[in-house]
Length: 100
Image (cartoon, rainbow, N blue to C red; front, side):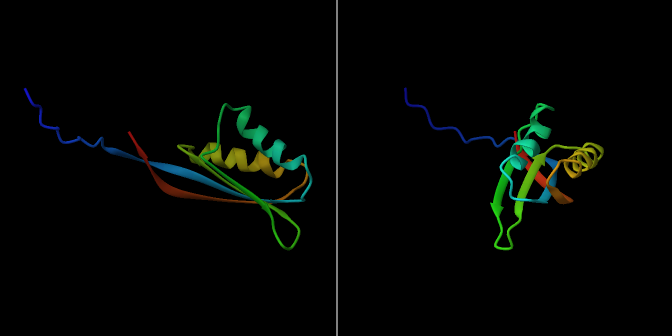
């Protein structure tokens, strides 16, 4: 008996919000672990983490966290601003899609 391959059924995609954080800090070795610790102690792993030392000499860190509500994102941004060496934190929210 030969079976025909069945068509794959695509699961519906759930729309969700992605919290985006852009951090500018002094390029010191302890800054990145302190920033990451803020997420880790809440049991969170950022969906995206990109960091580099810009030509102007500052450390820039871009972080994206899916499914983070606005109140939590504002709280995390305030906590980021309180970290030694962090000079500026910008936040944004964008629509994301998580495949089920």
